Amino acid sequence: MQISEPGQPRYGDGDTSYQATGGIAGIRRLVDAFYDQMESLPEAAEIRALHPRNLDESRDKLSCFLSGWLGGPKLYREKYGPISIPAAHAHLGIGSQERDAWLLCMEKALDQQSWPEGFKHYLLRALSVPAERCRTRD
Image (tube, rainbow, N blue to C red; front, top):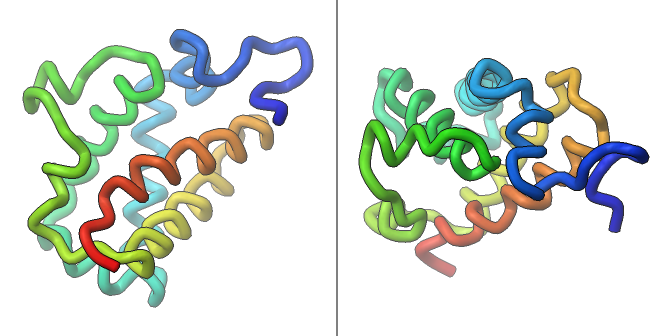
């Protein structure tokens, strides 16, 4: 499985994934595109309903989380404290349908980024792990 472009560092090593996004600015663009998809895709209506009406804090939390998760600054911990993905989502009814809708929004958001295709594929596969860990039923 190739996890980087030829001649490039391997994604997931150190801060290579964070750097591939363009840092926090690139992550925020991805997160904005992700939540835009969540607000517009009919398949995402159920997961959109799990979020507050105003998505500003949700956008910030996901951006901060992804920063650290991708090997960059641990912004979530600095701003919101430690996070446990399962515990943070335990109060929500997240099943395989909601997980898949979340991943669909992320896939469409990734499609909008000007990142290398190999990185986009790597990132979507990697994000399927925490997406699965959010599942609380079925």
